[in-house]
Amino acid sequence: MTSGGDVRAVKLPFELGEYLCTWRLPVEGGEAVEAPGMLALEARRWPTGDVYGDVPIQWSVTPSGERSAGFPQQREFDVLTGRLSSGAHVALLNGGVSYLMPNQGRARGSAAMLSLEPFGETDPRLYSRVEFQVEGIEALVGARPIKSASFPAPSADVKTWSATIDDGLPRKWESDGVSMTYGFNGRFRVGRGYEFQLAFGPVITIEVDQPLSAIEWYRCWVYPMREMVSVLTRAPRLVTFVLLADATMNTKDQLFGWDITQDPRNSVDRAVNDANPAIVCDRDNVSLLSLALEWDELAANEHPIIETYGRMATQGDQHPRSRVLNLIQALEGSFGHERQAELEERQARHDVRRSEFLDRMKRLLPADDVKYLKRTLMKRAPSGLAQVLSATFDAPPVDVRDEVLGCQAVQARMEANGGGRVEDALANIRNDLSHGSRGYDAHDLDELAKILDRVVRAEVVRLLGAPEEAVVRALTPT
Image (cartoon, rainbow, N blue to C red; front, side):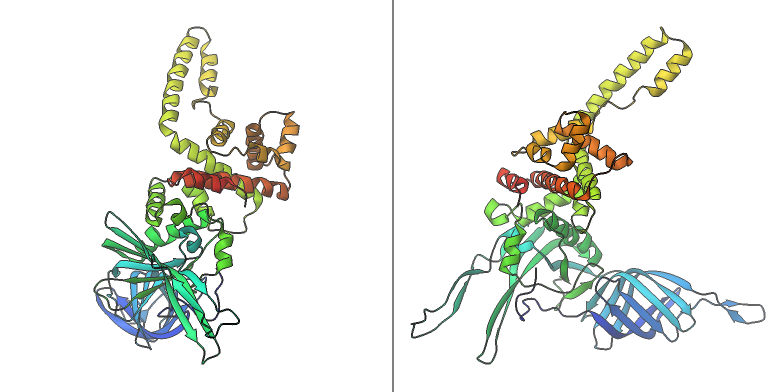
């Protein structure tokens, strides 16, 4: 979402940039030593720190008393703390420091926390609350902060512009020790009698009974929300900020990482409307928390559609060939996962019939023929992608076969087959692309990928427990 105007609805405690700081470097078997340096927090970069001065080097001492050391020397850490020149505090998380020479080193973490309160030097700080923003979340929830607005007629004596805020906000959902709130931060500015600006930005707040570390919050709640919003709003979305706190804290800590932009967005009508999500919580009477918990359960069970399509949704600029292969793989994996018991029963029957057949052949054929037959007879029960696609196309409330049939790539494959079913042509296309036995025009594959993308998205919507209207919406071309 692009920012609206100059007013930022969400103001963060810290910004990207370079900070002078004093690091506390751990010493094995001793107290940490302090060393001056820099902290670098940049967009699309891992947090890093430079260290100068008296750094803790491991020296070797010869019998004659001379010292020597090899470089670089590596140290891993869970937490590396420091104090900024401004008085704030930093903790680099899950990283390592490399000492390049006796008076210089470089640290890198998978994330960094900035705080107004000092960090402990061993265990990561735990938090019971997180606040964050994911692009596109407004479209998914469907709640708007401004309920109505009015402006005066040209002939009015008193010219008043007004906006009425929705008193139904924030939305709040609770379940088993988890509380989720969705609302808006609002800010306004009056520019000395020349301008009046009002802006809102969405904020998701989650509170839990059992506190989590910053990394756990991001992995368990923030990033999965990004994946889910990306899938349901049909476009890769970014996390713009993450703030963490605990009941004992008077301030909020700020999380910095590779894919957190630190650029909170204001909500803009056009961007929200263009998202066209498959699910709208307010309209479909679905809670954002229930969607998040369903997504988490699917991920915990390693559901193939989350492992493939969910991970793919946050990435842009994929070649149509890769998209077609990934989408078909997602459908095939979902089919197998959802029908695991049925497929296991079929496999058990196949094993029995195969064993009985081989026993009969032992009485009829020479030993060498039996060995050959045993080696070449399929051990897996017969199944095919065409069967998967047929069941998938039959399941949704909207049949997309005619759309798929209209794709140039499918028509070309069916012509080569001399006719047949759409499902068989798609299975042939997947095999052609996987084995490189036949090429297809990228534009033709893109046409096919757009349809398959809707089919996979509809499958995700169904798995999340949304109503049938949402499944139809996911299947409908935009």
